[in-house]
Image 1 (cartoon, rainbow, N blue to C red):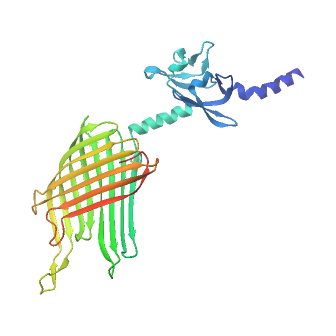
Image 2: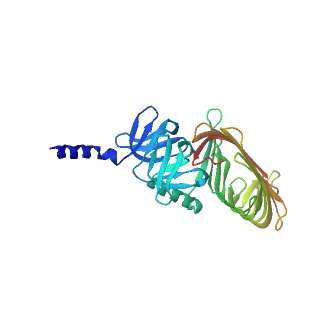
Image 3: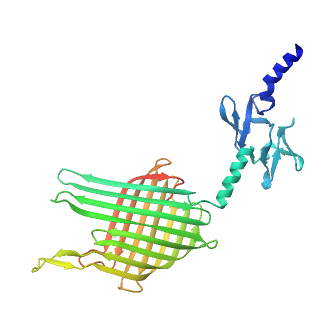
Length: 372
């Protein structure tokens, strides 16, 4: 009879005998499986309450039945079951070096076997990231609509996706601008431009970097069916801090522009129309530019870039692009942005203006780590 009672008590106590336990300074105890900790909190998985996060400063003692990976100052990592001594020290029973003693406040990190495996996998992926890793970006929208004495529609949509590691960066970007005047019959398109591109940067030193890019542009009002620019060069990080970067860069590119045929009303007819044939322009050009990004406050960022492209072959002339954006976060994924853009071409087709200016404001949607 006594042996039966002993076996029943042993079975009831088995979960506690083979579980980790933490003792709090107020005398409470939590039993389960210690998952991980840092210098501020410890996470223990309990049977009935699930994961419980406890403030590290509130913990008086730790006991583990399975080995834990314990990080100590200086990058030292020891592995073994953990117990707390009567004087508040932490003892780790390691197989390699025997008993290791440390103060509770000196422990940098604690991980279970599964958490350590996940950490090692994350570190390995950090050193050798996949192309799908570390993407973040923004999507900006702006809409203006009038009805009544006027009937117009104006819409802008731009997006930027950035994949950035410690050594390289890939940026994909696009902007769509559309405007329509419904006061006329038929309706008149007053803006229709689509532009975008991809750029890759890779560091070749502490401050130097190399870049390559390809850009595409289409502008209905300029009769530009397609523009493609392939460029590359080198740059220098004049400022590279946590909150501010300022880069200058120089390179060369090959510009191809395909303009469609079009007609203009002749101010002194006859003939009533002047017709211009389709034109294809190909030329090499120099690329000189700068890019500036800064965190103005905890919620507001400012960014701008200017690139100048003088022709060095083909038709003489030059072009430049200027972009600036102020964005303020309302929460982690939603903000408000104001953007100004100036695209200039010194030798546009006859009758077409060289400047295209855009001022847009609207919502900004963010995914991943904030990209400016």
